[in-house]
Length: 544
Image (cartoon, rainbow, N blue to C red; front, side, top):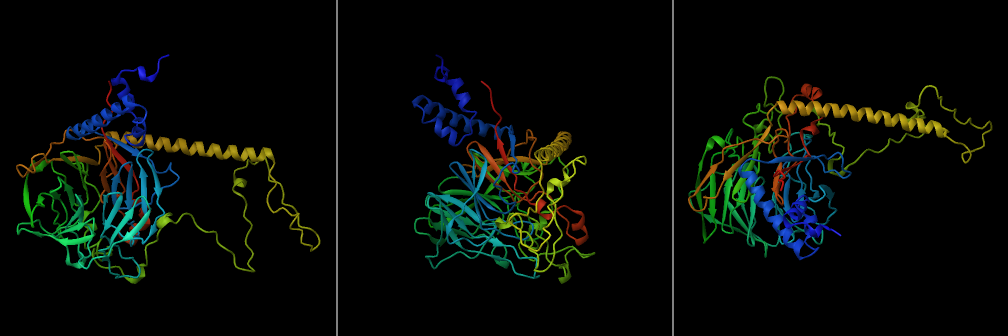
């Protein structure tokens, strides 16, 4: 008989290429030697096709609905993320209700499903804006900040210089403090791994503002070294992106300089990490007209010889997101409210704390039923099916209480005696209501899709070509050829990492919420401004 092994290699590779580029491909490599070679060709071609799609701006968006999953990660922004093998790890972050996390989640990139890791050991402090990198079956976490609670007022925010290492195999957190020399507390810094060292740059250091110091951590001994650099160096900053070019070179771009409206969008620097004194050199960037509009709220990610940044589409209407709101004057500092004609006056004590409406903050799910006080008679409650029954089928009466005072609880039934037919009618009525709700939701979604087709996408992809960065100290922004439809709304403070032939975008802040107390009553739930959406940038499927 004819089997799949009788197909030509081109057809077999096309079929295998339709599988997710993770665990399924690894399993296919174990079938036989021929399949092993075919899978290797598929992986190589997927990488080439994805790089070509990035260069030509020929990409597609793949959106994953979180509502269909049983285990849903909490909405968050300014979290830390990295990818290893078939999984993406996400740590910490915070919500719009000034809550920071110290939970660790794992996304299976093959099934697109989340899993919260119930880890052991010395947990890190709840924080956001920390750095997270992978090194030899370990996740290295450093720094971060915690947002002040809105009540009581005037609480100080703080940064951390904690160093934690998560052992993936042992599912265990270790805190490393075996050295006397430590970097200062910082947040919003950047980190990359070069051989056996983690190199960090910049960051917000408490109320001293941004920094341009360079520190190196030996990942074998976990000892810190402050590196000496030349005098010509980047401006102090935080919230920037750091890209590893080679074992001895890295580049940084973007960031916030600390001063009002000092967004560093134009400068790109390269660090040569050879010798005792490391050398900074400024990169000449061409085609500034095609550069991303904002680089400090939008992380960058390296794809082969290109750096990808997602930012607001120049052809779309300006977003309502106020970037200045997330600077040291508001997000990492004193929390201000706009009251009256003075937009920067701190709210008084009568304002009170903001209500936390997120049903899953720090793992809380649902609510406990209220317990009645002793001696207080509670009104009887009817089951939910009572409202679903048709009027022509009256409810049967409750069992009457016994005439005497003898306790007959073993024989008394306090619930309704539903007949089999009445139960089926109630189930059918509920199913009918659910179908109506689904139909209305589908109509709303179809109308939204029609509106989105008539409007330009909110976010666009910007690509920086860095092929000549080491030889000629130059880079250039590529002209935007097209903008893919189906992407998210304008989002900031999300994470962007690279997987196998795809870019993974998670979380962030989608839209602005009201500041004044009167505006908050008219706006949506504040937690809706923070997202837990999952988006993938992929290359379009090709045919034979």
